[in-house]
Image 1 (cartoon, one colour):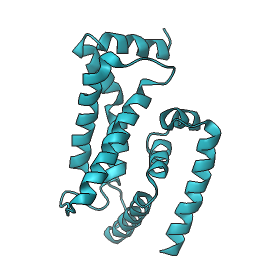
Image 2 (tube, rainbow, N blue to C red):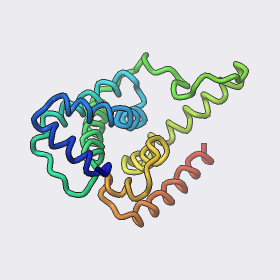
Image 3 (tube, rainbow, N blue to C red):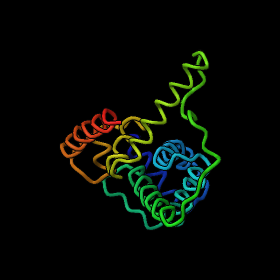
Image 4 (cartoon, rainbow, N blue to C red):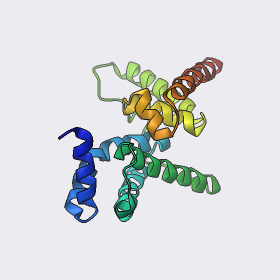
Length: 183
């Protein structure tokens, strides 16, 4: 059975069996968490939103219809909407998070403490710059570099042609370079 047919069978089973939905959860939770984390930059909130993505998916799985797109595209769309709501709600009330530790995305390395601090600051500056980009550009970079999806897969998730994704990717990198050089 092909991967696509296997996924369709699992989705059909999940419509009536929570254990089968658990298999879908295991298959996609890490990718969805990464996507959410890089969009909001807070581990605790990313965990909460990831949980909400899967609860929402489980609540609506009976209405899911396979339309030639991977199941993950549906999950990313749910995550995208919840992230947008998160940012909208947070813009109404500003909070200072004590949970976020700079450099959290870097693995431990053998760098000297001073080098690690500089590297962490560089990563934080890059992430801050990325978070200043338009939502669709942030989403593109996360799907491309964190989830390592192809332009075709990104196009399916973002509902754009592969050519449109290539063009958006090129413009995004130019904007990112310009923003990084101006700081």
